[in-house]
Length: 91
Image 1: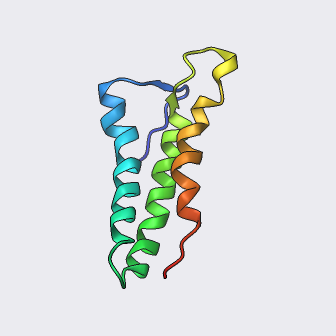
Image 2: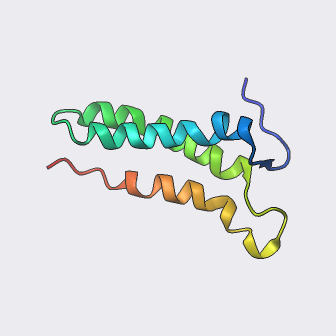
């Protein structure tokens, strides 16, 4: 069962490896697969997993440090990792 903390998790070594690193690895894995022809189905299979991991990182990590002026930083990860993957085009 997935346990979601009630508040944001501060960025430390544990949160980097458990929350931030998985969407970054799937992002670069998908980028690597885009270099190999004929991997469109594999990329589409990885897409829901990557979107979930990016959403989880964007909603669980607390990057603003409690400063209201920097509250947008909490969603920057999610948008930055999800936006390029929405343009799947095989050439």
